[in-house]
Amino acid sequence: MNAIRPLRNPAELAEAGFVAPEKLPGFKAVAERYAVAISPAMARLIDRNDPNDPIARQFVPDSAELTTTPEERDDPIGDLAHSPVEGIVHRYPDRVLLKAVHVCPVYCRFCFRREMVGPQGLGTLSPEAMDKAFAYIAAHPEIWEVILTGGDPLVLSPRRLTEITQRLSAIDHVKIVRFHTRVPVVEPERIDEALIAALKCSGKTAYVALHANHPRELTPDARAACARLVDSGIVMISQSVLLRGVNDDPDTLAALMRAFVENRIKPYYLHHPDLAPGTSHFRLSIEEGRALVASLRGRISGLCQPTYILDIPGGHGKAVIGPDAIRENGGCHTVSDFRGGEHRYPPER
Image 1 (cartoon, rainbow, N blue to C red):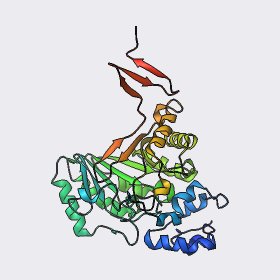
Image 2 (cartoon, rainbow, N blue to C red; image 1 turned 90 degrees about the horizontal axis):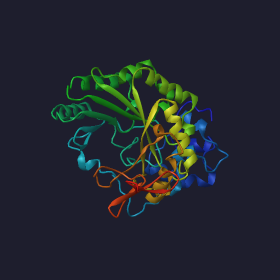
Image 3 (cartoon, helix red, strand yellow; image 1 turned 60 degrees about the horizontal axis):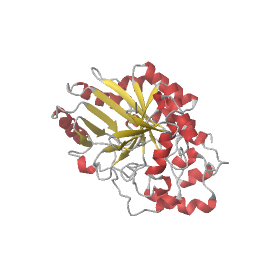
């Protein structure tokens, strides 16, 4: 529990008390297929006396990951179908993903890119591939936003990040640079002056999208790391995944969204879990998800409301799947309030 380095294999997990000896064979089979890493910060959060601990469920391998259902796929959101050059995903007209690295400080057991990340994944873009990626961005004036993802871009050194942001600064039509990361939560000590300076992109607006799924992840150290980012002028938004056994109840979701807002992080997306291989034990039905999102309306401030979305399999983009509050009804509309009451719109005179 006082680990000073990430736990990366079943033996280290067993030594830390996260894996019972009788479960080791199943854990080894999972680790042979999917990357494993638990940062010291997350290891300290795990309650070893709770078999249903929501932090452990996100990071400790489970033999259920060896079960693949027919609808699951290696590339569930269709990144490869929209990759004109290595490292670039151009799914929407005005923005691209730049996947500079496919390594993470932790490996989520529900990751939708689990077939691409980790030590045996796609690795870090070579200098030649990086040149081609930047040439693509420069050649497409419709690209307004570049989103660095992967992998987690904040595992790169400040020097490497500075090289990327300086090259983006030279492309006039790029106005927004966004970083998708778990680092402020799972390795908050990395958020220092050098890294923050590296995220700044001259002439552009920098956003950091923080991935967190449970309010316990926002420890005092994580909150301090987020404060350093926001105080520096970087805008923060959140991304979370709706996960069975982690945050699939109204109280936990409400606490998570409030914690974001309290730390000057605007709730952005609440993702329906993707059809990644070996993740069916995390998935709720869309009906269950809609009911949970509907339960937040009226319960917590409008500042705390995320957008519940589904990435359509095959690369067709995102669709909002929030509660259906308004229905057409005989030439007018029926509107549902947060208590479940129904009202005519426009109202009768």
